[in-house]
Length: 290
Image (cartoon, rainbow, N blue to C red):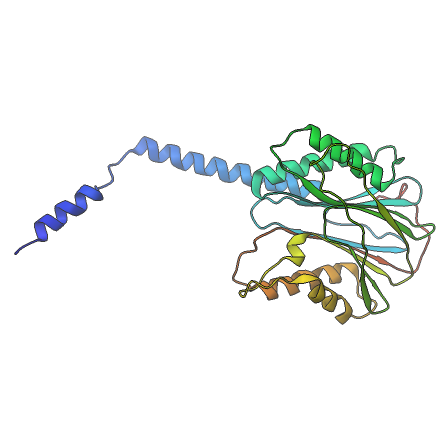
């Protein structure tokens, strides 16, 4: 039995030849180009919000990194002069991914900068104010996790508060310890209050603030990178390793752990602070960033 004719008719019925619609094709191509252009511009704006290069500051070595899982990410960081001799540090992570998360991260940065203008609030008070603003915005159950700290370089005292981010780590004399300070993510419950912890830093101390995309990075066996592997990276580095190289080592280790060919599931962000020799610095008079 010759089925060739029936086979051709069957294929045509379920996969009809695509008619030519030049106007639709042009519209599709224009929309695709417009979307690509919009994403590129949004990516550039987001990069401008995140300070990329940090000037040399006496007594402190700083480095930051933010690697989005998609074109746009929800992780962010900020470094702000906070009155005479003080510096504010923030690292946050917005729930979700993509464009919506990137917009909320931009909003969070804007609110944070508005809240730190007068340099009067303590880290717990800053997080409490941010929580109420984000909760009041009613952003469809989205939330933000964030570290926020203030370093007084005259005394080398660092005060940290935390709203749902992984515990910060401190490397001191080849030993890594968690800085146990926790709190509820921002935007979930109005009126939430936050705790803080203060540390008297010493020369050579390294503080690492990391988003959960670092610790929860997974390999092919679905094992998480975790605190133990992160601590191993830190203790394997020479004592005088610069903050920028510490960031690179951590990102390189997570990339190798997850597999170079696999796409990351989450954004990865880092803020690394290393105490160096000169204890004198007035962050209010120094241009920190390019």
